[in-house]
Image 1 (tube, one colour):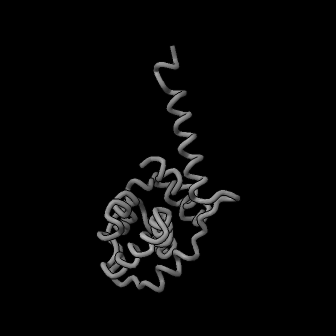
Image 2: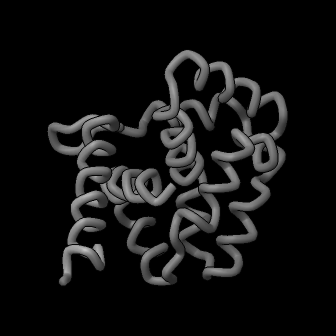
Length: 145
């Protein structure tokens, strides 16, 4: 999951830099909110009708859309989240407001760019995986002797 979190953060910083820095200032990492969103396919955090729409697009577009949805949610509530502290952000992101409309959410999702400079999601993910594997080799006790 760490590879996914690292890839998510690349696109988080790229798309929502001000909010990204705000989260960083509180050491608020994606594992606090994103893991619940992804593992439940947004069924705990979004109203069911909206979660079903996310599932439909996920089935069509694949895992990248789940992370794009997460960024879309953060974009939708960016102004509110920028005014909150760690505890309030974590609570807010655990159960999102029930009055969220599909038009607003999908508009925010559409505004998210899943391309970093010249790399797309899959390329950034592959790069993160490679970096983590190389880091594992460099930290391996067998290689230190």
